[in-house]
Picture 1 (cartoon, one colour):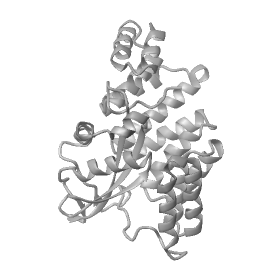
Picture 2: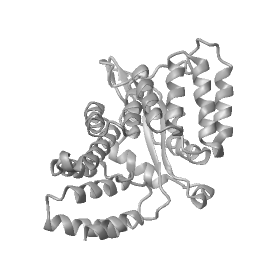
Picture 3: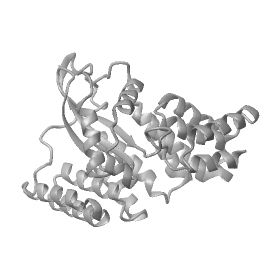
Picture 4: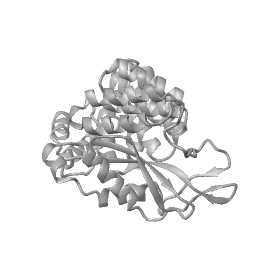
Length: 314
C-alpha cells in the first residue's frame, strides 16, 4: 500500500495519497516514511502545526543509519515549517541536523542561508549560499541570495556579478535579473541596497508584528486569495516566492521586496497578495509602535488538490 501512496503523491493525487497513508498509519503507527509523506501533504495544505507534528513523528521513527537521507529531509522540512511558524531557533536546529546527516545536499545550506539572512547575519548567509552553489551550481535562488547578501555587505560589484549570473542560470527571466543588476550598478560601490534596516526577533526590545488570528490565519488568507497567473499555470511554472513586507506603525503593509524569486509573474502575484493583507498588530519598540520588515513565504503549485506544492520527497 505504501507504494500506492507514493505513486499517488508523485502524480499529485494528494487526496488519494493521504487516504492510503492514513490506512498505513492506522495499521503501522510507527511507519516513519508514511508520517513524512503525510507531513509533506499537510504542509502543502498550509496546516503548519499538523505538518510539524507529522514530521516529528517521522523523525522519531526513522533509523538514521538506514534512513539517513529521508531523516535529513524530514528534519529540513520540519525546520522550514518551524521557520514559517516563527520559531527560527528550532528551525536552525533542524536544518543543522539535516546538514549533519546529508552534508553534500546544497538545498539544506540554502535553507539555512535563508533563515540567517532574515536574521541579518549576512556573512553567515553568504557563506552557506556560496557553499550551496558549489554543491549544486546554477540554482538561481542561491545566486539571488548571494547577490542580496553582497548588497547588505556593501559589495556592489559582487552583487552585480551574482545577479548577472542569475540571468545566465535562468534565461527565461533574464530581463528581470539584468534590470536588477543595472539598478544596483547605479549605486556607489560602498552603498547598501536598502536604506532601511530590518528588525528581527534578535532585537530584545522589539516585538514583531502579529497577523490577526496568528500564523495559520495568515497562511489561510494567502491560500484563499492567490490568483494563479494564467500563463504561468499553462507553462507549469511553480515554486516558492519569499517576500519581505514593510509593516508600518499602523500595521499596514506599505512596501514589499522579493527576497527569493521564481518568475516575474509569480513574484508579482505574491507581492499583490502580500500588499492586500489586512492590518497586522504593529511591531513595537520599547512599547511604542514601530515599522518593521516581516518575511512571508508564498508557495505556488499547479495541482488542483492544494494550492501549495509539498517539497519533493527524496
